[in-house]
Image 1 (cartoon, rainbow, N blue to C red):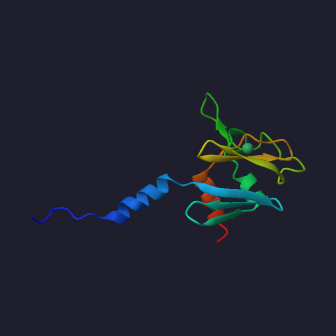
Image 2 (tube, rainbow, N blue to C red):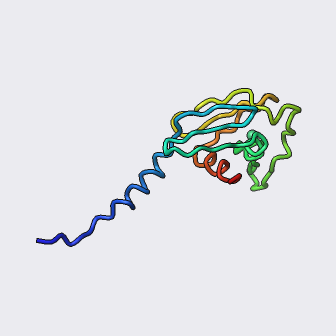
Image 3 (cartoon, rainbow, N blue to C red):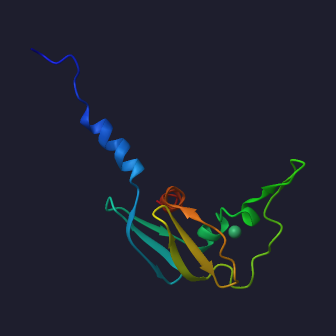
Length: 121
Ligand SMILES: [Zn+2]
């Protein structure tokens, strides 16, 4: 008896690979963040691109109780604002860069990092 349903294995695989976005290694070379993903791709992210995309409330803006949106004027970048001091992992979903001007509240989810890495291609 023939099965009524055909399996479409590639569709399932695609969905799984999106959910399991992960990196093998990352390193900082000349302030450039280089991430090697578990699917074999590499992302090269310039420090200025990384800092300007900072997703923290201070940099990306926040909404007050009255609904007014405040965008990135609250905190001017310091002299060393585009220099990476350190990058730490946050759980299994994000990286947290520490900048030499003392800023470190931006949590970059892998999806965002992957997007930033693709913009230079
Ligand atoms: Zn920020």
